[in-house]
Length: 455
Image (cartoon, rainbow, N blue to C red; front, side):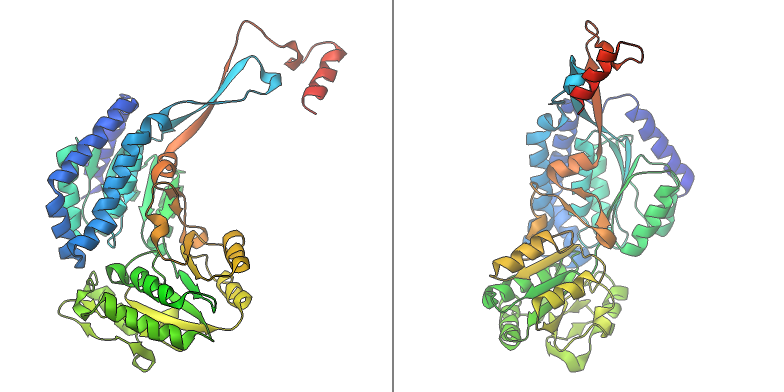
């Protein structure tokens, strides 16, 4: 699509927003209910599209995509009235008599650019938050997940007029045309490289943005950990969606005293969770399939390693005796390959991780309370779990977002509403009484009163 139709679409949304129809809470709730009705109507098509794009079975697709969208919708419908209400705050004595309040207002016209790995929920959840906050939206799903992009377009077209919510499909040309426009807010989920381009384009218009990126998310298993449970939960988090998860454990550091036992348990868990190699999802396309295979060093594979070019599937693979010099440690893996590194001293490995770009997620398996405290209070990362993986993002009650090179901004639940809102501070001042001390002219006693009050 050329820039002119996109500009016309955005102009239409801008004009609609200026009618103020999106402001009432009842309107926002009504639109969210319409979205839910459309989702329920097209649920089977959504599940089928996810299977075609990424080989997700119905259970995984519902658990990691559709169900999370319903959960966000229901949460917003339940809480939205409270979110949109004015919040009153204590007024300082030197500003009496007055009412001090904050009110959350929408930015206006929002662009949401989503990725291919969780193409449904990473499009719909930010959209739900944006609409709950009172914005209009143009949605740009990934062209890599074309079946899901098509069904998203269908769902949104059935629910909304394009002057309120519209979908733009396509590839780089459409992305470029969209980023050349002046939006009021941009929400991007994807790679660091594209995120830098989005930030550069947004800066031309001083457009505020959220970037949900990724990186090499570490996992540490120390000598005090429940190794059986650690292996079980790491296998779950790493190989879900064929490893194509931005918060998947990218690699595992294991204490040297328990490494052999842990690897044996890891193999057992992979065999239990994936008794057949073809039960794992598919890699999204040939390009990523080839990239992943180039990271596998056969001499270091201790489990898995097989692949099918016909189905674009790679069996869950574990590599041992890995160092930071190996190819698999040079970039985010984003696939079903798990490198295992060994460490001796906990603080040394934490320092090593701190010296590298801040990860989106960090997982620690330990029973040691001092190590837990260091992880919670000192170690920088977007979010994480102690003694589990990836579940930190599966809740509306906590924010999800990156830090440093793994992103900026956060969303889900109330945090998503806040992300797409500007908080206005307003003082409603009484006109019947006016404290004279604030004005330039006046007796010396006024200065003493000011100093006493503001001391």
